[in-house]
Image (tube, rainbow, N blue to C red):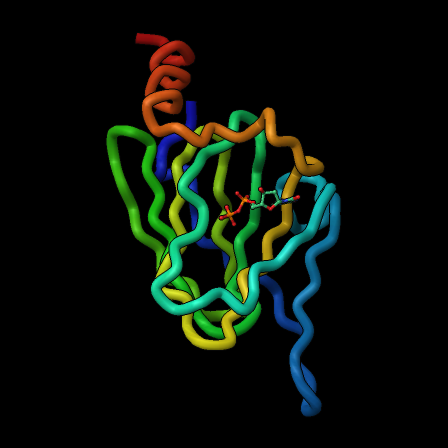
Amino acid sequence: MYSVNDCKVVELPIVHNESGNITVLENGANIPFDIKRIYYLYDVPMDTERGGHAHYDLNQYIIAASGSFRVLLDDCINQKEVFLNRPDRALHIVPGIWREIRDFSSGSICLVLASTIYSEEDYIRNYDDLKAFRNEGSVF
Ligand code: TYD
């Protein structure tokens, strides 16, 4: 079972150019899972909190493509907060981790690269269910 310490901020490559930068993520090259789905959050009202769930199987790269926000991670023992504000950084969220995303800056875009297609069955939307899942999966 993964812990919050397995959720790392990864530096992404930048192709510099006088006319701007490009960051490329490519299956089999520089991302530790194959991308099956891309989605992005935008027009998030101030003081709104997103997330509030975990996943059984999903790996995600979360990128502040524009603006900034905070991601709270929780493995039912430890918590960790990550501030994302650069398009050349990705937070890798591994399976079995509760996440809440908040403090979206005005105009921010939260880009998510996901390892599976959308499936409501993969969501753990109740914190106690996550605790039970993590205890069942534990070697202790
Ligand atoms: P949800 O993942 O709960 O939002 P967040 O974690 O960002 O607060 O998704 C909100 C709704 O959007 C959900 O009820 C179904 C829909 N949705 C899809 O249809 N496909 C997707 O890939 C995602 C991420 C969400």
